[in-house]
Length: 437
Image (cartoon, rainbow, N blue to C red; front, top):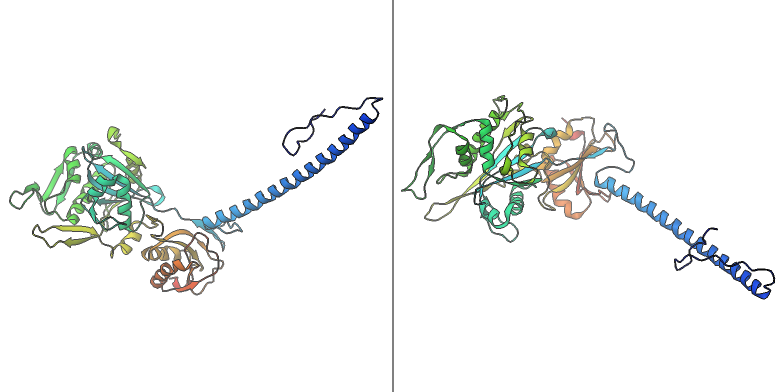
């Protein structure tokens, strides 16, 4: 015998007793009760069926809405165009990885830092030294402060936020590494020779200064290499410190693998991923420092320096500060970080970049200009037609008007307010044949 369906309260009904012969009126009463119960059970079953049907319909509806929302978020279309050669195709753009590595002294102070920018396909990249004495400007309610002061007060997270604000782009990874890791790398590379154009001084006053590193070639053993990258000379301009850090990194990476010179840029090609075990000096954070170096050594490596602005202070000590040159950053960023992300919401406008011409290389020309104008290219693809004559920069939300205007001005394209839902994009750029070369 099967159990009866559940009643309205959720309890399972028990089987009714069968009337025996000669029960008379009592048997009729039981039969009537069974009939009423069956009717009630059928009503409950019908009601449950209706509720289930409604729930299934609602779930299906939510699934469709969620799917379409996901497509908008990823820059796709509801017709799911999967062929990159067809109109309407779009794809996400992964931001260029930029890892901040903070090198700390034995007492935990920030001794040096560097940005490691990933190269195409996760191979090679760019090393950008960041002096520990670099002045980071106003941030929310915080006044200007040196990088080492920011690190001392708030650790790697505070340094990451403050630095990202001044850089005008976000850092996708951050780690804290003992400066002893630099010594370990130098032990694997061998003595590191660097050529200095002028001496580096040490001291606290003009009267007690002495030469720390003389002009000319200086050969650094592993311990001296660690000190060289973390040492700040007396009245040494930050630009000079960055330059000698670049020289040291170049030779180190060169000696960790095979070398190929490029007359137009400081590059190291064909390096093997020969990264030594860093042991206790491996540090913490993501991605691990050893993985960052290993990725560098699998492709072409470039050395670059931040554009810095000199700020002399009016005081008797002749103090000079250096900060990141905000006027130079728009040109610098697309050259070093082709697809930057935002350090905080709203720092850069999310831009969908669409090709509306048969010129397949036009987006490579336009993308750096979008980044220069303050955009973050989050999706690329094809417009609904490849016969667009006039380029347009479109925005839906009025809050995105300024960003769209900046992009339109730099591209020389028409800026249009649209009622079309742009999804996750603040700005959509449709590139026509007028921008094709």
